[in-house]
Length: 318
Image 1 (cartoon, rainbow, N blue to C red):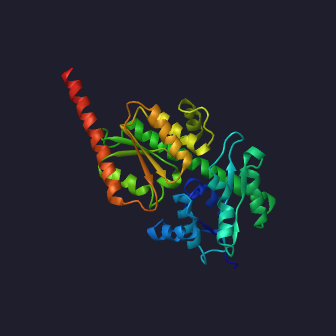
Image 2 (cartoon, rainbow, N blue to C red):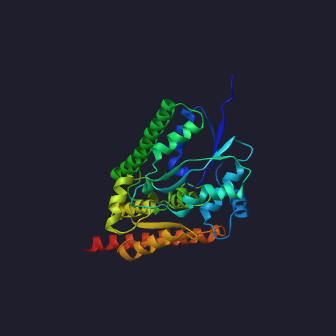
Image 3 (tube, rainbow, N blue to C red):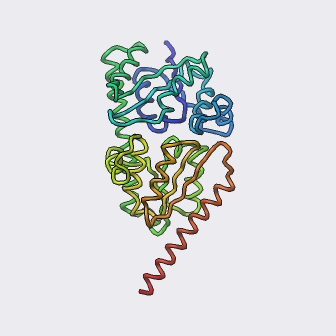
């Protein structure tokens, strides 16, 4: 029996958004997927050693994950995404990450596909072409993509449904402070970047909802209320989440990784346009100290609790 070939998926950047699409696709083609482990301080240090100083924190984390897959798979999977719709763009790191890895680690076997809707290069045709490149027949290639896309959409619908259900029922503790944490999925889901923040907020008794568990087309549509001219697809989703949830949360925490320009712009824009909702912006880099971060979060929650208490006293006295 021939052993299945293995493809390595770095647990960073868009893996956190599209892991269902990618793992289903490769498994349908008969490949075994190898996922790098959760991010650790060692993963980051590995990436810092490979990246140029100007790279953003998620890119450094990504390079650490790629390097950790050496000798654990036949090839490493790194797609190149430039635009998902003709009138929008993605961050330049998603355009350049494939070439950055090829130049940083020239001995590493890498495969990928391109998406650039602005120039009529679409996901479906590119992923099917990748499948053919990997030896699959035409029908098997189409079937693998169609099943992967179906699984990805079902996964996204379920995430949005669970969060909407929580909001409708009020959850098991309806009196708890509720905070919307806004950030890219690759930051929120990362074990070193975003998860410690969410976990710590929950340990303070906060009900956390996130910007990534949302109906994505609806979010992009709603983003126009805050900024009709923004062109970055993923930032439009974040703005849409803010617009959708601003009236049902007690506060908003933005998680921004240094030195992200689009996220900095988005945070500033929201702070100017949101009134009556406490906002905190957490900017993270590889030197972030945990103690200082916790102090900021505790202070933010204390301020929200004090405002809520004062409002309740006014309501009782009126």
